[in-house]
Image 1 (cartoon, rainbow, N blue to C red):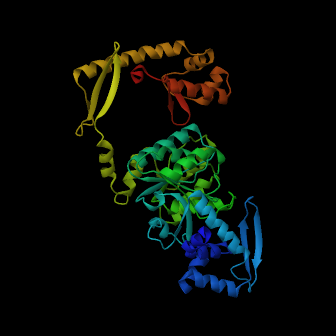
Image 2: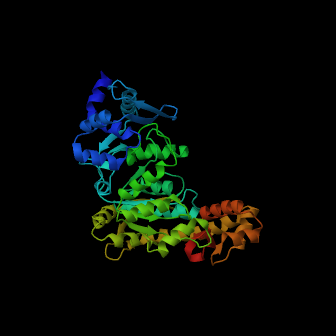
Length: 439
């Protein structure tokens, strides 16, 4: 009974699933047929009568299987068994379907040529966002690239802008992580079925996005992450967004495919400049040469859109509306609570005298703590720290000075950065923190 009710509820979706499962069928052909018949049931009846249909589907082991449907076959064919398994899986994992003619179908996606007739999704963000930006880049991203993607995503999402990406390793994952806890949230576009978490190490992120954002795919359940699926995914990433930010991209990076789709769709393309000697920067720097807008801060993105990105000021005010925060400061064994209020006119913070005294004493203590930290470093950490200057140096220079390999030096530099005694600059450059920076 439950199965019958489910099949009844998804009657229209089932016909579209069947049509899109026909070998050789694509969005363009579907819309040509829809223009003629106006009804998925009539399209299905037509193609079933007029053609010897061939289907391709994936079983529970993610193996592709082909079968043919003869003219005389009815709804008891294998295609119905496959569709039934799709609907059951939909119910099992708590996913949903949205069709091309649904009022909640992403409006920007509707504007591209031949958008997917059917989308599978988990989460609610896909149906309730008003403005969106995509952030994509290299899977083998540098630490610098990951930090840039995370910060840009976090800042844009804090203004109510939804961040879209492809859930891949590297830049994509960092963008999702930066945006997921902010107002705008994030949407992940998959190149496989929603029941498969790819890459597998993103399982925790998958579960978070299914609640806080959305995970979306045009591919049926059990579709594995095959190579040919990702250009289709990239077309959706750019299609659902107002613009695309490329953070890192090599000469043949898939992120460049997304940028090309964005240009074809009339979307804005942004690029974060990279180090000229880094192979991860070749593609993105070339985009800038070809006219992509250079991005060095979130403001470079915001100013480009003007009226397209709406309610930014409202979201900023919403964020600033949490004016009063309680802090506890320990001073000579006593706890003091004070309130920090934002001065709207000058952007400064007002403190009472007692708070100011505590703040100054706290900073002096920090300076002393940094000297203690340096004394407590391991021999290798001290060696790396002492090799640094007040001006930034590339990691290659540091490794030569210290006679370390890049992996070891990178680990030590990360630890020193976490301890707060060195500073990381764009392009994998490092320097000692100046005295006033410690304060």
